[in-house]
Amino acid sequence: MDEELRTLTERSRAEAGGSPAHARLAVTEDRDELAEVLTGPGQPLWARELAAFRLGLAGDRRSFEALVLLLNHRDPPRCASAAYALARLGDPRTSRAAAALATNELRVAYALHPVRLLTALRAPEAVPALITTLRRRLHPHDPYRRVALACVEGLGELGDPRARPVLDAALAHPALAEAAVRALGRLPKE
Image 1 (cartoon, one colour):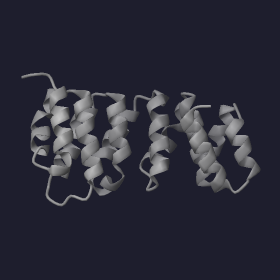
Image 2 (spheres, rainbow, N blue to C red):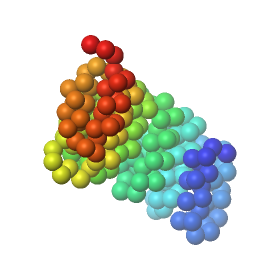
Image 3 (cartoon, rainbow, N blue to C red):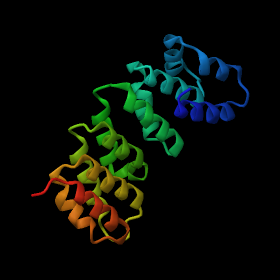
């Protein structure tokens, strides 16, 4: 079993409180049954998350909307699971959705996983979104240092020279300076 699926299955089993529906959702191979959980009324969050995750790993695009909603959830383990499934889904809408979530200043507290997903996807939207998000995090006393650090690391991994000015600016921030030096070292020489 995939490690991420095992982790989600264990977490959702605890949330399900011994529900027989959990055992069925964890093992069924019937994609229509899983998709029904996503659209059926009154389904608990754990069930929707498990169904969306399993459909996403299977490449079933019916999971896309549910996974994007979970990517923007206040619970970090749900965001991490959604990002993992979205990275494997293969839906062309994923990078645009992740970029929109990463750059939404009203939801910046939940931008860590969208930023990491953008880096993993290496899509055309990734570099502009990470630059925008990092630039906004470079004011004094910004409380979202983990998001800023993920942007710095992502920009270094992506290695796009357009990131040089914002990474140079990140050097002035002690919490980001070391990562910015590494990221700048990964960019092509001018």
